Length: 498
Image: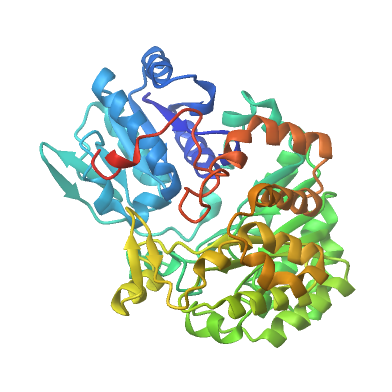
């Protein structure tokens, strides 16, 4: 039996991916432990904890914004303990060439991780070499063996349910939290230019079906087990796009409505919703949806973001959801190529016409490797280049004003008459305390997911460094929410030179 210790950052990043890896490894006899950086007052304390745990390998599953936090930890563990280290997660799928520059990493998982990591653990347990495992890039002396990904398995039911006890046994706040997230499928067929799904499709081209779904029986059995064991007021389906298969959804609605007495929410695309499906989902218990508007300017959505959904479709679906009593939220981004202040105001004005419960607002920072970033470079629109992202050239001279949408966008949704003052408000160079209004946007999440206020406050306080991190900085330049460590990460001057 081999032992892996996963290192994550804080409670707000409850790792479904880590839970899936843990349950798969435990089902085959291996030991799994977890520690959060937020539990330790210093880097030295993290090193001491890992030393006491004596794992055979330390694993980091990371999104790109987490990289500046995790790199110095991995470097210190290698320097002080010499422990083998594996990096995985979305960042490694899309930027593996960046990760292999880190001389303290021994393996990089470049795709789905259950089977590659299990094979690695089996070989560590047996004392066998592990440089030729499909799906893993392996360090060999001073070079790397870059193995190809294995084939994607269509049968997701063969994997055990995520190991929630890995988190919940140690963190009662997560165990008792009103919302439990589940995943019914993997992959997305759409090719939005700002998303990494097209890159994932390229990674697995010719190696199986990218979009795969668990059976209705399997997902409902997991939810039944969750509800029986943990306090749960809402199930949220974290799939990129929950409403892809009409046949699957019809079966799901029938079984879920009959067997599960807990409301659910989901992420959807508006182009696959109609009256009959919305009615079925409502009757099954759907009480909320999140959809990506991205831009309220139709031509921008189609030509820049590769999301050719007409405004009329959004309007029709928003009316349909209100008729059936389903709350919904939209995602919207600003700072798009060639976006003017008038475009930004029109975008929020159209979003308001949809009358959503709330809106998640973000300033675009294109990640390298996306189609949007490639086009920006080709068209000369990349004004500045960070380690992992690009800054879009401000061709209209309005970007500094548009950035104020981070805090003002929420107000425009909740207080519609303020849209008439949008130009004046967005041109405020020093919004001062007003920028902290972005924190109020968390109230919309509380309402959508039916989180008790006292529980929301406890969760906010336990993760306050995440919610408040970067609030005193330029929101477009600071790391996205979720990247704030419990103690300082590596300095910017050393970023990229680990």
